[in-house]
Length: 202
Ligand SMILES: Cc1cc2nc3c(=O)[nH]c(=O)nc-3n(C[C@H](O)[C@H](O)[C@H](O)COP(=O)(O)O)c2cc1C
Image 1: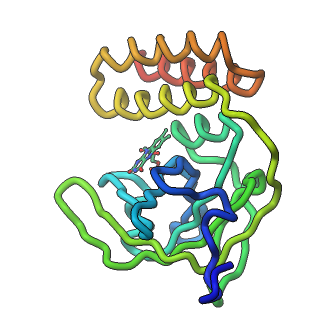
Image 2: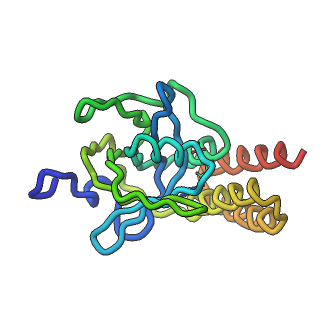
């Protein structure tokens, strides 16, 4: 915690630069989860949400979100292509509000969204941490296979939008890194991603 009583984001795994998290939000009584980058730059924290996603809609209307820090590549792929299951979520109450968090998160931070600016393509919101929690803090070296799953998932979201074959070539190259460097979860995640892509191509 900082002297002001607000969470110090370093303690919850959200550092300078872009932290790839799973953002959870509520649409009415339904929880939603999607991979989203939390941008921390010069002491400020932002999110950029492209129009059309459920997360965009929920943040635009509710002005709150939870950033879950997750090290399971399978959760990244599942939440890219579909929503997670109700049983993947827990609920926490902060300042009288109910927030969905991921059961398997290493940590999570509840953010209030302010100064929302909407353009034709996206919204940018400043994020103010309200409350945060650590579930587990594993000691873990960077794994190129994990990073390659994230890169492949980003290219898969671009492929979904554009159908541009160049993304399939990139995903193929990242899949080779996963086979070489990834552990079991990374291999399950990349196979799941390639299966989802096959269905998209049909
Ligand atoms: C690693 C990763 C990071 C992403 N970061 C963002 C982001 O910062 N902003 C955004 O709008 N979409 C981002 N996306 C794409 C969304 O996760 C994707 O469009 C998702 O399907 C939205 O789901 P929803 O409709 O349930 O909100 C990211 C995807 C991945 C795989």
